Image (tube, rainbow, N blue to C red; front, top):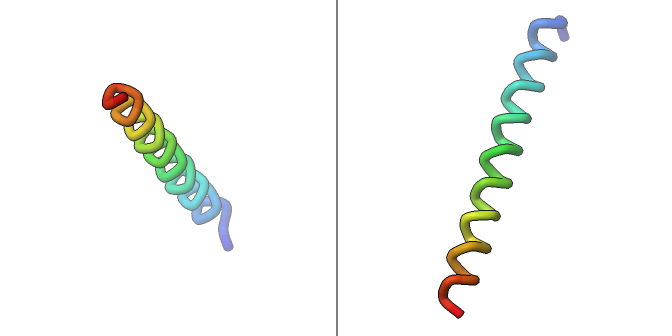
Length: 35
């Protein structure tokens, strides 16, 4: 694995992580509004 490949994986992982956190926060907000 080259340094470029490692950086590419890291970027993909951080984007995935950010998207996951955003999705979870959105769901929490929607659930709280329904109460």
